[in-house]
Length: 203
Ligand SMILES: [Zn+2]
Image (cartoon, rainbow, N blue to C red; front, top):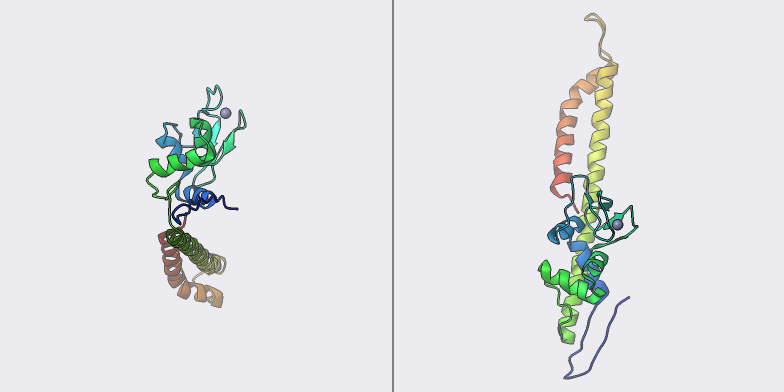
């Protein structure tokens, strides 16, 4: 759903596509980074002293990425926009504007824009979404490749250990020979697949 109010002065439309902005803001900002920027100390386990109740122990869990926060004592929870609204006592729109300004996101929130500019912006948003989708698909493919390489390596490693000759005179088991010949390459493939999936790690 989009919020859209229009006034037809000078052919310029006042457009506030707030839901798109909110999605954009949440996708681009990390909850923990935002809270720390506003002075909330977060420990190594991702916990913070909750600012919404009289908290002595860190009761609030802050999740990475856009997954938000949850206070296990008073039950406050939400995403960065909910946090900014409650913490600073702002409306949804003002919270969007504050995050946009404080983190230099450069979204044209609240600005008067022409229909042409609006179209261009919608196109850019669409392109960003498509790019994210493509990146996600690529990451999933690299993860699949990694696990396939891991399975192959694990199979050979198992064969090596299970069919290893117990005495020097014992004839070599073909499965042991196969594993011996192939594990070097499998190990190399696994390392490469791991590097590739890390290299394009998608948040
Ligand atoms: Zn709390």
